[in-house]
Length: 191
Image (tube, rainbow, N blue to C red; front, side, top):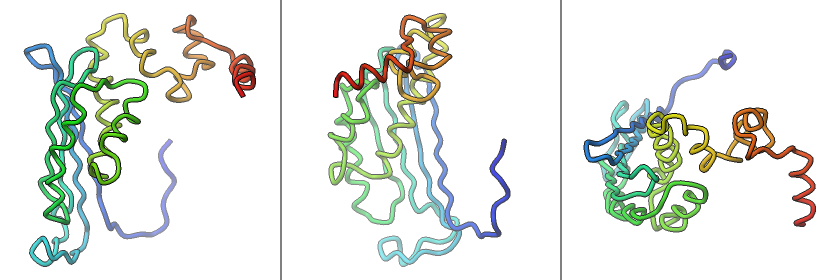
């Protein structure tokens, strides 16, 4: 079901995010994400020649993660081609701190510790969750019949459908299933 008809309005801003996953000839994976922000009106900006014209990219940035089948990151390349301030692009190399980390439970928290606040870039950091899910989606078809079993390692309790008390887990992954009442009792016992 689509969203309802909105109130009358005028477009002000457009953000586009593209993500792609590639299997390389050497068996590694390249997962790429790009973000572009475009305004529908001119924006005054001293560092971009006085203004950023309507329709011109206000932000244009991208990240490539190269990882193996276990989701361990071997190489990171990040670039900021357009931004409101010249100094923004200087932070791109900081994202190499992700090299050696492994996408999985807790990875986004680890990335935030390495690249949060002044150690990173807000917009680049917004791409990290999308890169992670794109990596998983890209690799799943190559896992053959192990899709759900491998998925459980990353996805269990990450959303409604993958909750340990969900009908999907009960049906397809009964070894991971827990009824909601026992989960509540376990939580109370820990408190």
